[in-house]
Amino acid sequence: MKAVFNHIKGDKVIWIIVLLLSVVSILAVYSSVITLAYRSRSGDASYFLIKHVIILLFGFLLIYITHNIKYTYYSRIFQIGLILSVPLLLFTLLKGVNEGSASRWLQIPGLGLTFQTSDFAKLALIVYIARTVTLLQDEMQDLKKGLLHITLPIFIICGLIFPSNISTAGLLFINCMFILFIGRASAKLIFSTIGMAIAGGALFILIVFAFPHINNRIATARARIESYVKGDKSSNYQADQAMIAIATGGTFGKGPGNSTQKNILPQASSDFIYAILVEEYGFVMAIGMVFLYLALLFRGVRIAARNPKTFGSLLAIGLTLSLVMQAMVNMCVAIHLLPVTGQPLPLVSMGGTSIWFSSIAIGVILSVSRATEPETEIEQQTGNIVATT
Image (cartoon, rainbow, N blue to C red):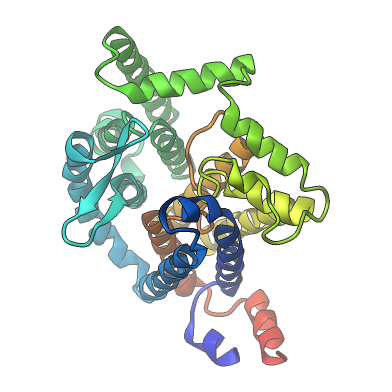
């Protein structure tokens, strides 16, 4: 095991967090796909387990590759990626695979696989904003330049994601505002961007309500928010089943594979996998998952604070916030603190592109860490622990 740690660079604690999340993911997915297995594979859950393990292994490969690339190269790579994401998002809206009244996926010709273009666009935009804020560091008080080079790309990407995935567009926008705030952008630019976003979103929703056939997703989101506020049991079926799973988990849970709600709860292996984890492993797992994501946030902030370069700092904090905010939203939905959003639990929920783009984000964070923290005290302690095992 010591030899493995000698071949990986960057923050070792983040590597351990990713490994722990992957182990939890395998256990949870294998247990929660039973209904899906009976529906499409004659009860063969091993098919989904093997597929998920392969996806996770490829995710580790992506982390390894991306963390070995100098993080400054991503400035140019994702600038091109941002340009490519615009036609990809447009094509997804018009010709994408429709599921749940939303076109979020593109079919990969010849492979029978789909990928969610918003995951790619989200990653590209975060890197672009970090790069642009760095380049305009001395001109961030210029409202005209800020609106052109920062606000416009944010509106284009979030606007293209919004019609089919409101929660992702909202989280991405908030994430970008955090990057601007940390990058010392002017308050005028930040509040102008927020104000225009609110006005644009309200106008779009009014148009859709006036012409409901244009976009069914807004109607779905509206119904979810209304049922959440009113506490309508008939409309809150998913949230209610998730709450039952969590409530019956107790302190230590029912044990691996003993969940009963996995047979009832829709999206048990993806959007509501946290509820299944708590039902089977109890309050201990509930707290443990929160701790792992908060530990990831702490390490990301630490990496950002120690990096002497603005781009590296903004890159690390932007990508870390993206992963942690998504995780917190997923868990808050499961315990009914937020309306159902459809956000997967990063590195845990079943799904190919979500895991792979989360892995790329982790790899980039590790690349920043590798450039600034050759060996911290915690990494030395980790090495000593590994050496004794």
